[in-house]
Amino acid sequence: MYVAGLVIPVPEEKMDAYRAWAERGADIFLRYGCLEVVESWEDFVPEGKETDFRRAVAAKPGEKIVFAWQVWPDKQSLEAAEARMHEDGVLDVMGEIPFDARRLILGCFAPICVAGRE
Image (cartoon, rainbow, N blue to C red; front, side):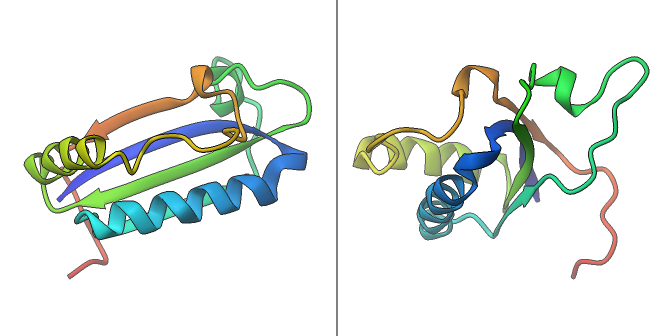
């Protein structure tokens, strides 16, 4: 298992546009071997004393935090899928991205503890 995680600031009024964008992306990732995609819209994101999700992405007033992750079989599967998706052009952006991609945080992780999964 290999996990790609994202933290994204999205203008609140663009929630529907973001959902459509995320659903399109999820369909593509699943077609290319991703096992699971979760896109979560902010419900409770407290302000921290040192740091927090908002500070991490320099969220502006009126932006909500999206916390998302993709589960891949392994790192090699993700890397191969990314190469194929770019070759096939399926990740080419069509229309406006509903957030400021410069402030998106992406990280990939090898799990060290997994509970509740087969």
